[in-house]
Length: 274
Image (tube, rainbow, N blue to C red):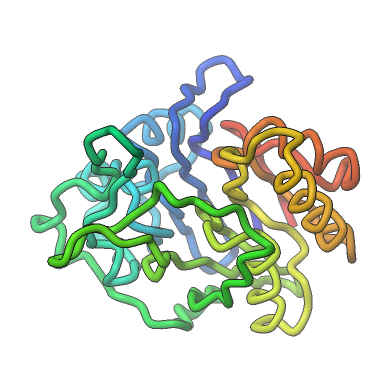
């Protein structure tokens, strides 16, 4: 199994462009998977530079309905005319960033009607075959995640806090190894990891994804408590974590103090082989 970061907020490799968003590629002996498509078509050029042929992808997954993960949907479909796109039906909702005194900012997916025939809507657990399992329904222990009040959904009755029912995660199993891929982990890396562990019967060997800690106020009481609790739980076992995107520099540095080399940057071109 090989996992490659096609696109992320940061790039330290010449020839790879960064953009705020995420796109990952997974290849096993049986499957070629694209997980998220970034905010635009930038991930396609990075894939070419990295020698990844996205026209050969047989399965595409959208982790949730935000544009920094699904803005490149149409670009991918133009390149690859066969792969089905697995997403939660709720990912087509109207999602906004709402800040006091400002106009609500739409952060949902671009128009998708032309792509509807490619979509497969997923339930709380979907076995895609070939060692691929999608799951959602993560139990939300709010003390173990960063609160994100600005993330909201517009309904017929107005705006309401986003409950992240549109979010899903991917487990990949091959040769006795297991990987967890998550987009932003809005409900918390610990909560998501525990949900993955329940489905696997153990912890995954590697995790790729954002931890959504970037909005914490550095060194505040809330942030210090959450990071300490998160680091303590992640330190259990031997899982290696690749993270970035929405994790934030301060949170990454604090977690690295505890996890050491088991916490690694998920910048453009980062890869792992299991």
